[in-house]
Image 1 (cartoon, rainbow, N blue to C red):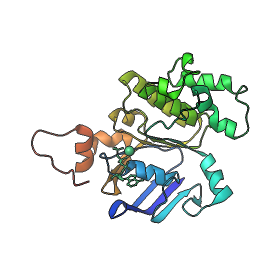
Image 2 (cartoon, rainbow, N blue to C red):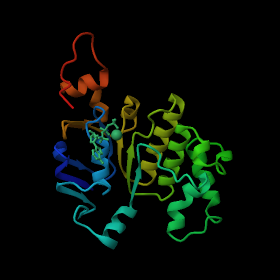
Image 3 (spheres, helix red, strand yellow):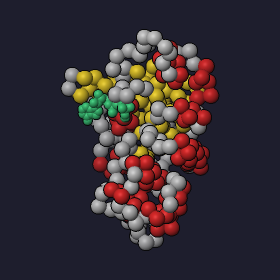
Image 4 (cartoon, rainbow, N blue to C red):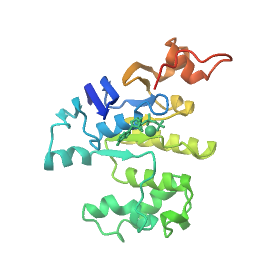
Length: 250
Ligand SMILES: Nc1ncnc2c1ncn2[C@@H]1O[C@H](COP(=O)(O)OP(=O)(O)OP(=O)(O)O)[C@@H](O)[C@H]1O
Ligand SMILES: [Mg+2]
């Protein structure tokens, strides 16, 4: 479904992605872990075409998106949904218009889709009174959930989430994880989520670790607590007493 080969990206002299290989099957729910600044967001942005790699390929549904242009490129990305790390709502639009935007851009009338927007708002655990509010009237966590509702309204086949629960309380985090899982199952989607929250392992099918620009480990989420890879082991269990080992340099 998604095959990444030899992906390489540098910003100036700083190499972020170093010939990265990763295959993600249809129906897979992959959690990507890795230290802050390792290049997780840059990886996701290369998958969704927001950052152009210097070398390598990203094949989605048989098409190398790094080589596509125009209409064909648009068609592929219409099947993909991306929830970015920071909500990225349009400040001049209220919540209803923000969530409805992807469908309005496809020619639908906002009044016709208001019931659907209300349903999505409730599905991310928000009250209906947010519908008329503007982004600057919302908390950070509320903005995040509005961004999630906006992505889910299109029913994408490929779902890419960048830290969807960072900064949310444990109850909302559980709700978002359950929603992501439900969406994944209902849409038979391919899901990739970057998360620092170990609770995601209960919902994901696979876990991969990004380290020094490469995927250094990929395995079943159900077996992650038995993983003996030292980087994974230390990352998911937290640091022991004493000097930090196996962390490499960023
Ligand atoms: N557009 C850009 N231009 C230049 N450098 C960038 C750009 N985007 C990211 N970087 C750099 O790439 C590196 C990786 O950034 P990235 O945001 O992917 O990290 P991350 O693993 O997502 O971290 P975090 O867990 O903190 O979100 C950082 O050093 C960052 O400064
Ligand atoms: Mg990031």
